[in-house]
Length: 529
Ligand code: ACM
Image (cartoon, rainbow, N blue to C red):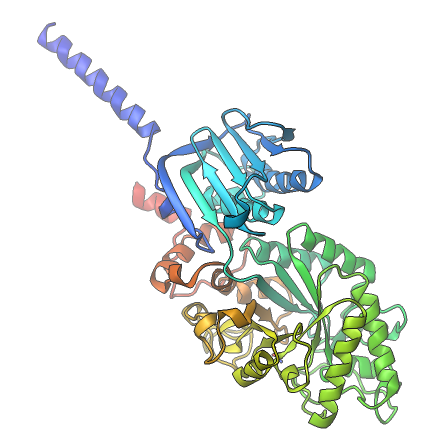
């Protein structure tokens, strides 16, 4: 070969090598930004690419698994523009597809864990129970480019790093509360809220249905509760309520996302809307005026009138009958005008009525003053000593410390929405804590889970909800899901920063805290060019 021929051949070989290497870029699944951080991630260095012929295959023909496949397809179809049919199969599918099965390890994965394996050929989601598959889908979403969340068609490629993820939750109860009493939010807003918490593997939606300012659900045997009690909200003006059909729709929507709805009827305080609707619920027999301010602690049901317990029986009975979940939240907080000698027997009777209707009680930490059934659960928001009293009665706790988890707390003194009676709660402050070490004498064995409540005295629409909830909720979800040993603020804030484009594509109006090194897809293009 002449020298120039040799140089031409070498040049072509080098070009070929360069392009084949470019196609086979090396990936690292362990470097992907996932929230909550999974229990274990192993990388194998290559990638899977979704294409226009990809399909989702379900092992067997269970309706429930087909539902999970369709849920995944509904996320992927708009942005990829691919058909992604959902098919039943009796064996692992061919190359380029997604495979969903219930062949995961029961002992390792439990009720909610999953095993997600990505090879160059196939994405396999395995679990022992369907909920685990649903959480595998949430992880898969986060492994795809952020634009997968967009509602309009986007350009590919739709590549995913290969490797394996084994993951399961640290706490059983992982929730968020929305207060629809202070301001009313319609069914569509509630569904979006449920979608947003589901994306971070939360499994409880606590719906605060009543408060001084509003009664938000139809009670057929006491119709004026919704008609009068639901007519206004904080600041005045018209508000609303859910019909029982609306509520069933919310419960069903949540169930399809492996979320249990916990309805709350706050009592004996926070009841002005009921007291305005029915004069007989007041000790003096006189209806109260509707209330549109934001003070607390001034109202109480009349604890020594028998009609009060008939009212509880009717309300709890009607709603328990359309609530498939095991819990009924009776509030019990801030009953400042109910003397303790009346409060304690009231809570005991409310607990009895909840049991009669087949549910277990959850109540804010003050209920620990009453004699509780050990199956009841105290939700600690203010006082650790109340939590300890509940534990001493054999009860489990849900932790919602206001200075960490209350999503209505302002981020700092410049935040326009929200309140700050518990604290200003920046992202680091809501993330850096360990439930099992927060209170002396309360350990992991006493804690059922964690919940982040959003009270809505100052929140009037979905945009405002999102601004207060994001980005604190993903951090609380991580505290509830991931082992404490894997959580670290310095690495968490980098992971969270990489969610900027994902939040944008999900159309989430988030607070762009200066604590977080936000990186959008356009920033990463800038740095790689
Ligand atoms: C509460 O924040 N009053 C439970």
